[in-house]
Length: 451
Image (cartoon, rainbow, N blue to C red; front, side):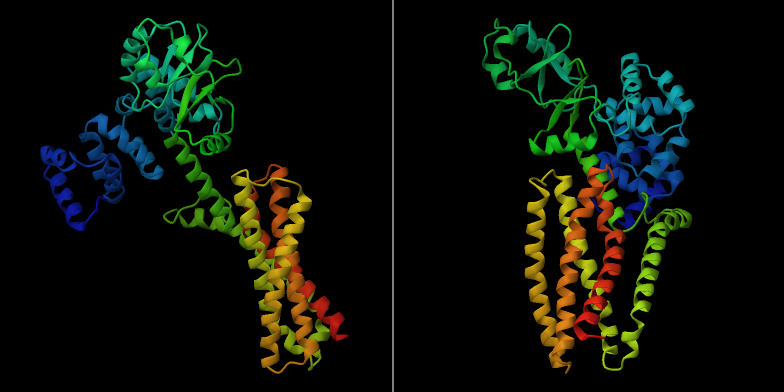
């Protein structure tokens, strides 16, 4: 059952903090999940949030810190000493610890790592911080269970028990040689049913999916999604086992990528949230608005070149259909680009571009024909003569085909040039299709009507 943060709960919490009733606060949060407590800290006053973090046990607050909103966490960390942060970091898995420390200044990073009592934990965190952002190395954790191929089953069981204490979830048991090179994985079932004196080399599975430490995190997400993996080992260029990436880290990657793509599609040039400052929100929105403005000015210039049509009383009604043409062009382009972007993200765009071209033309012809029939019926009901209806219908079909092709090929071209194709689903496609749509519309109308 989801935890409901009511006003009564928050009022009661405030009263307990003001009265410094530490025992009651402990009891209040005793049975709540750390993710629920993180939501509470996002709701209370900042000073109250710091009070709660300092009061609760590090075993719980270390988990809470990983769930907090980044802005809130940054402020809380600013109010904790290096020793206090080190105490929290000491309870975290290495991947989470590296993420938290990575948000600090370089000087504070050194101070916190120096304050860590566990030297091995500190060394692992320093290693993770050395990898490039958005790489498998920066994403992985050092906690895993590994066994050597030369061990016996009996010896392996003893050592696994010792290793498992440091691992929150044992997804897989990895087999390595004397140089720590990844050899394969070990099935827990095979380990249990094997004889005590059997060697691990006799029972392990030599087929195992893995990623290089320098692999892009989005590529790692694709691999784990494709093969339904809960965890995947990470190796270096010499195939030495370095760590593992678990599914919870991949979920965060997918969420961040989805948020970024959504914002690009919506015309936001950077990661912004509703509670950001006015300056940050304006900075994130303005560039695409300027692009849209210049696109609209281009449409104005195009319409000026067809001013003679507007001056003809018989055909001035063409002007009233320009919003329809522009809207359909924008919608068709966004639909096409959204499908292609989704396909590129999931690595589903296969085959030649020519087959993709023919498919889009077929789809456009069917959609264009049906919409053209509807618009022909509509204009006939309004009393427009046949040539007028024909001009609008053919223009609409042509615009749909062109918009569909633009929406298809722009994301593919951007992707081939290493640019995020999500750019194509936003104002870029809408603006370009508006311009092309109006140009095509008036050109065809002028030709058919003989103006």
